[in-house]
Length: 355
Ligand code: ADP
Ligand code: MG
Image (cartoon, rainbow, N blue to C red; front, side, top):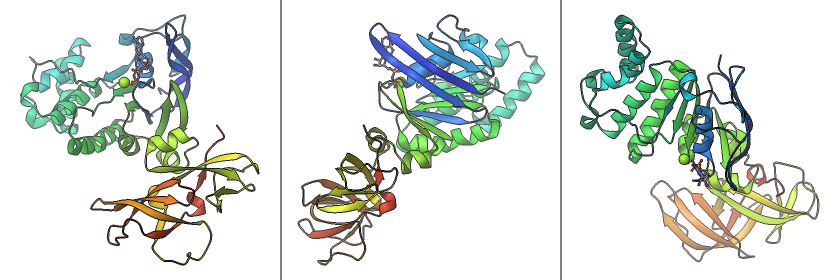
C-alpha cells in the first residue's frame, strides 16, 4: 500500500521560496488535486514527489519509507511512480503500441507478459484501433490517452500528472477529465494531479489542496472547498464568489450596507471586522418595490446585466456602493437601472477566517 505523505516539505531557490512547509497525507488509492494559480508551487511539489529535485526542508514518505529528505533523496527510477507532463513527450518514431510497451521492455518482461499487459491497457484506454499509428497521426486527445496508457502500463503505485489537459481544446478537456477519473477508478493507484483549473479539480479529485504562495491554503473534498471556503483567496480562486466586508454585530450577524446579515461558518466576535463570501448563484433577485418577507434582504440597483444563454448575469450596487454579482435564471429580464431586492440565504453567507 503506497500512501504518500508530505511532511513540512520545503524548497528554496536561493532567497526565493517555491514550496513552503507543505504537509499532506494522501491515502492509498486516492486522487488529490493540487490546485492554484501559476507560480504557487504546484510543479515544484510534484517534482519533489517524483524525486527530480531535492527538498530544502521536510520529508516525503511513501508506503512508510522516506524517499526524500534534505539528507537523502531516492532517485526517480527507484520510485514506483509515473509522471505525465504537460507536453506528452511521446516518441515520434514509435507507434502507439511501441510507445506504450516501452516501459515494459526496459523492465525486461517476457514477450507473452508484455503482449497481455499491452492488450489490456490499450483496451482500457480505448486505443486498440490506433495501435499501429504514429503520434503525428493522432489528435491531441488520442496522444493524451497514449501518454496515460504508457504511464499506467507499468502499474505504478503513484501517478503524478502535471496539467495533463492544458494542451487540449475545451470540449476534449472536459471529456478527458472523466477519462482520467475512470482510469483512476479502474486501477486505484495513488494520484497527485496538478492543475490551475478549478472545474478540472472538481471533476477528478477526492481531495483538493488549494495552494497559494508555496503553501496549502485549504485541504478538503470538492464540496467542502466550494461550499465552505475558509479564506478570501480560496473563495475567489474557486470562482463565483462575492466578498463582502462588514463588522460583526453579535456572534452570528454582520452589519453590511445598513442591514444585519445572518451568517454561517464560525462564531464571530462582536465589533470585529469580518469578510463574508456568497456565491453569485445563491443570491435571489426580485424587482418588487416592497422588501421580500424574511431576513437577509438588501436593496440595490442593477448597474449592468448580461444574457449568457443558460443564465443572466447581473451586477448590483448596494446602498453603500458595494457591488455584488448575481447569476439568475435567464427567463426574467430586469433592466439596468431598476431597483431590486437581493436575498442572501443565511446558510450561504460564509464568514471567512480572520486574516
Ligand atoms: P506552478 O507549477 O504552481 O506554476 P512552480 O512550482 O513551477 O509553480 O514555481 C513556483 C515558484 O518557484 C515560482 O515563483 C517559480 O518561479 C519558482 N521556481 C520554480 N523552479 C525554479 C528554479 N529551478 N529556479 C528558481 N526558481 C524556480
Ligand atoms: Mg506548473
